[in-house]
Image (cartoon, rainbow over all chains, first blue to last red; front, side, top):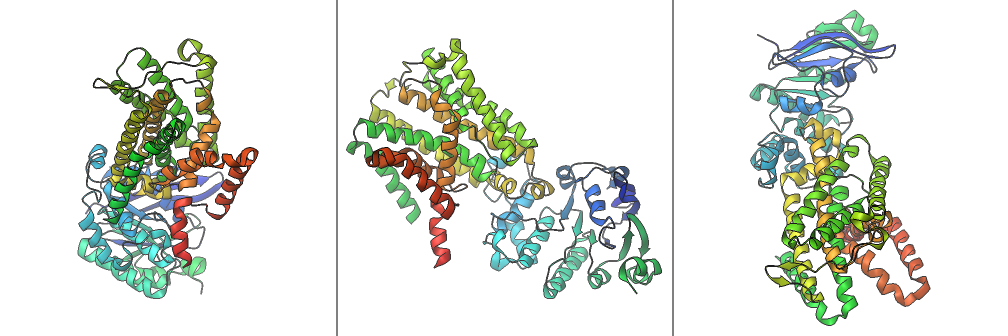
Length: 247
Length: 306
């Protein structure tokens, strides 16, 4: 089986600082890959280099057998890669429903067509589907910027799925989210994975979440991959214990 | 339903208003329409798409001068209107490019520089613009054999144009484009990551906003019949930005209310004679401090507190 995403020898240096220093890994279709590691180990920089936020110093990114190295975030979104950010990133002035439609509308038809399209861009039904899936019904008509942190986080993640991406990269989805919502989030991601064949790469510090969600885990330290394998094996790895998880 | 009734009543009032006004009143009302049209465009750029522009009066000037020149050359009004709007659209598109690279106060200065440039061209290129002497004898519009020479007739034409431009804006903002503009304003990085081409929408926000000012400029030239560089200076751009902010940036009726504050309020304050500008200035400072969301945010504030 060919990999959905193939990252080869990815590097991003800032002067003498090697934030990401020769990282290679692959994501198979339908796989959930976890990325763990201490703060400053290069996880987010790795994401940013893959997702066109920063230019990689070296390396290659192959998505669906095509080279996407250095493409802009806009083009990557159009290729079918969704993402969420470490910090909250919603359109605060728009309603939850409009946030979702905004996240999907540019994938249908041309620009001129959208000028003359229905106000919901024909995505009303899809938005309702996602709203139901993420249990956002009660707040769907409210301004996203006025919601609680946890609810905004859900909206943020829901937006990444609106356009039906074939790969989603999630940067710390559990950060600042209460335990009950973390359970809900896990359930959701597993459902999206099993029912819809969603493939994810998840950066996360919540080890319980990673252990239960991911089929495979890579642990980064100082810009390199320290260990890779099944969650339990990585968790028990000596080097990982020393660098990250502690004894 | 009540909203439509209120809107209809408002329009009826605007249609009937000149009956109770003298010439200067009708002129001020017409000027209000001009600024509402230009203000709607600026509201798109600033309020909806989250850019900043201190150059809207420059586009008003480009619209007015191009209209004056074309009308004097005998080009029919119905051809001048789209031509001037298109010219401003294209220049607005060009002004949008700096906005792709710089933001906030840097963009403010870039647009301010553009306005200065327009002002200097209007003042110095005498062969084209008449320089400080300006261009006069700009004819009132003639449409299908009907000349809108009478000031009330002209006001009604201008009012109709304003309503048409408002309807067009409402439609644009309701379309998926309106949502993309808001996404660009709220979070451009997130917008890119969900496939919204922020480059395209930034340019459109400037170009469409400029085209509105162009239309306003055409009517302005016909309204006053004589133009010189003065009404297109940087201070007028500041007044227009004030209109948008005072009315409520990103609110549909914001420019209509804001133009009342900027165009009519100083007139109403004339009873205070020498003090009127001071009172006006103080009122604006007070409003920015206590009502930064503009006058139209007042109902929300009251509701929020209740």
